[in-house]
Length: 186
Ligand SMILES: Cc1cc2nc3c(=O)[nH]c(=O)nc-3n(C[C@H](O)[C@H](O)[C@H](O)COP(=O)(O)O)c2cc1C
Image 1: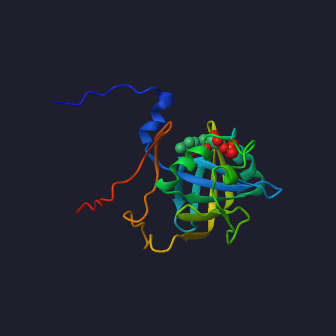
Image 2: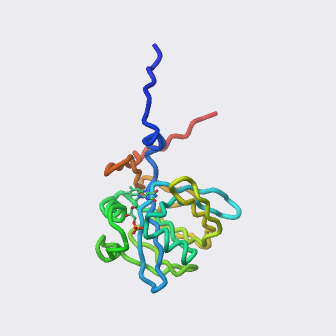
Image 3: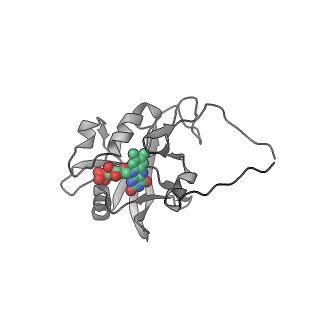
């Protein structure tokens, strides 16, 4: 018996590519105020040079900050901060101090002015190198200038029994990984 295929609304088709791992991107305004935006759309795009891409709607306050300062930090949150991740993805930095209200802790970065988020497990400090308009979002490509991770959770790959990344299903729903690692034999 074949499984029957049903149509999906084209404006919801992107959700077929979820769950996607959530990142918290920190950035600053020119007056040094820091902001955080929650993103489900991010990906590595190059190993050498190390490049990552984030897809940000021009409606976000963070879009303007990244365009102006040409830098951002991609922070990797864990399930313990799911509530803070949702908060930073539901209110705008135009009206809220998200570090204070989430609350989340700003730590100095090594190579950029934007702060790291202490509660996150890993941090990729990026300098903006390319901007691509892609429909109703902008793809910002950043060169990773420094990368740091909590001690003891990463040894060339994450130890998922020690760190539990967050995945966004859509709306207010998130998922986590089971601690089972699957290694297919070829
Ligand atoms: C789980 C989650 C994932 C999100 N992913 C994205 C994304 O990939 N790109 C985007 O532009 N907005 C995304 N958003 C929406 C922004 O985070 C949200 O509009 C935020 O309030 C913008 O903040 P800002 O105005 O301070 O920049 C997401 C929101 C949530 C809750």
